[in-house]
Length: 456
Image (cartoon, rainbow, N blue to C red; front, side, top):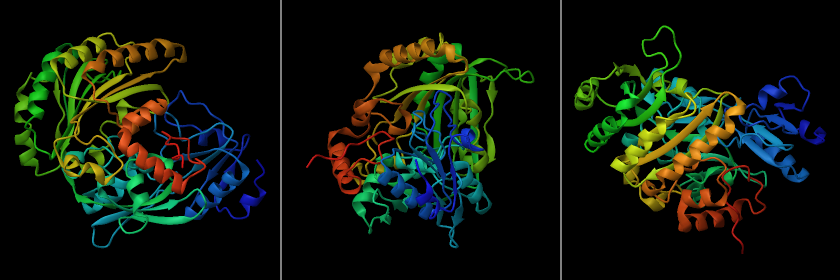
């Protein structure tokens, strides 16, 4: 790849194999991914992104877009193509009237909420602070405020997008509305989003934490949690996690096999304490870690569960309901999990603000399923790959009777065309393919959960 023409109009760094920093720059969160781009374009601004897209398009090279690099499929890095790295474009500007924030496309959710915390504000999106804003938002944007304030895309006011032809355009309700519809859930199929304008919300101090019980009590505990969630207020977004406590010699829970109910209550602390009373009464728990916390700290509380660098293989789907049968399968499989680094999650995202947005308003699909089930298998030794992948697939197959024909696009790996279809359904997929044909007819942006351009 000859870069002379690009260097003349590029203000960032261009790294090739053998250059200092190249190997570090190509590393993504999932340790299973080991790809070597021909060049890494470390962008400083939207003009750099446009120049890199144009160069890659004209030279016939594939493109991968890196924001946080947190996606389990590893789409942020490609083999022998151009990796457009926006991680240095992470500026966050809060509006003078404190109603919205302009966020560059390389920021993480932790960086966003660190910038908002001094104003006692928060943006809805992200369960883990190191997740990139771009990838999470373009796929929908679940997070700790989803039941009170909706998805990240429900709070997106506008976006700046670099198109496949190199143009930089605005997508909003009034400018390029078809593109604005598509990027709210349709992933990175339509261009590179270099900045987002989000509505933000008061959330200075929240009640956050986790209640921990022995995993041996999972069937009963999950039934208690299911009953609790039927009446929990939408200020409370929670998930159930089956995991092993880290091997911390200083903790009495060192290495324990646990089921936890963790979440964020985004409202008055006294009301949150009252809302949690019945769930806290069960057990009693081994540990009750709920406490008043600044929101930007609360958003980091789950980071330790999904550290970077491990080998990861995920399977996920929305559930029709959290039935007794589903609870038993989940409990039985976790009892023989092959890796102590694996985490099984049941999110309760619905029955709140997300449900009140009309299904047709955005490309995001499946707003009506209250529970999202995720097997996040993780292990350290590459030699354990076959065993962990086999267990994950067997577990997922056993859960199929309880699943909806629907997935959250950000939680799936390389599932191919069938996974993409399940993320959107036939009608939305067809509409997305039409928008794709308009903005990216050559499918330049294909290193993603890809939507093929409609055939005309």
